[in-house]
Length: 518
Ligand code: FAD
Ligand code: SIN
Image (spheres, protein in one colour):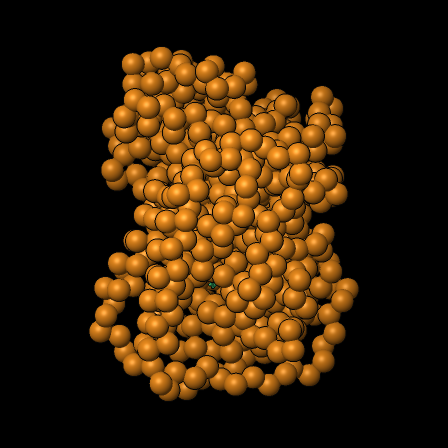
């Protein structure tokens, strides 16, 4: 039996963006907070490096702003960047108030550095910053009576009327029923789309759902050609792209070839601490030129005690695969890590559709440009979650809820062809990895575009014939997002930051965002 539920605010996603926004909303608003998997599952939980903020007198806002702009190859929006960076110390304080205990040494924050930062400004909780933030945020959310949590509920599409958003159709994964969640304001906090690539540092939740839903609702989607590849994921058949934090390089770890030779001096004078686009391309080039399966990251010059206290999670994981990082170099490869583009929003996180907001990795607020600087993402989640909640608190008008038709599945039948879904999932991710990866060419981009459009037709047909399932919802979003990435990449006829096309290797003097709209 289809059901309808009514709330003041619907938040789709329980990463740090979703949880923080829920906590900042006025307690007299009823809030539905939904997650398609376990409440803690999402990129936020796995964040290692930390949260960047100006936290000591040797540093200053302008330096953090300049580093962010220059790492983003001057495509970032300076106004949005300034807003985020000036709010960063307050964001750290809010997290502390919620119970996050950042690592200290001698009574001060222990600040690390990562690629692109010209000062030590990354506050962290050892190498499990995300776990600490998420468990504390969730605990506070659970204490709030106005917030209703829905675990294993996956949003399918936004409920739209007269070009305004009124909630979403949501599949309850436990009984396979589609419910209408009707709300005055809807916040997309669904994370990124790195699962569109075969190899990724991200958990399974990052399938671009929010971007695809917003696109289908006619939102502007911006700069999707900029997928960030993290240079160092553990290379091991059973590691499923476990991340080796850039903070190791911040502490002096060297990238070396299998024979132990360093190579970053050939690519950038900042060596291992050059921005991620440069380091990932350097590794890709060495691997392709020499036919290597991986390169190595060496921190074995540090003693075991230091390693286990600063990087306990990484040390434990590597040990479980028989790699003692105090004795030997770690085999690493680049993998898709972060979606710099997304749903276009303003400084209040409001999208181009009335009553629809987007925060965190799903959004494009203009703070990352053509390449995100390390540890600026959790910061973005916290700052824009607060801005979004403040805007809703001030602007919400509780008029009677509109009526919507229930989800109609009367013409769909159970699928006997589930192999199509698994096959197409795999095919999309392989196409993206092989044809739309770290280094691109016009030929490969057009080949990807052609095959992805055939796959889109096959998915559309399947979607209309068969009963909905969570895998199908994700596949539909994956193929839509992949096509937006390729279309954006084709339309950028220059190389900038994370988008490197060997057929147009120069950077244009004309700085422009790529906007894709249905
Ligand atoms: P997520 O945390 O990914 O959460 C997304 C949520 O949306 C999940 O709850 C998911 O279930 C839900 N969802 C998605 N689709 C649907 C749907 N259709 N219906 C219902 N729910 C849905 N950044 C930093 O700044 N510092 C770091 O140290 C750092 N380390 C990282 C390490 C790793 C391994 C990874 C993967 C990323 C790291 N990042 C880091 C990036 C950063 O963690 C993410 O960009 C950020 O956490 C994204 O938060 P989010 O709230 O936007 O999304
Ligand atoms: C890392 O710890 O290397 C990830 C940091 C980030 O993605 O910002």
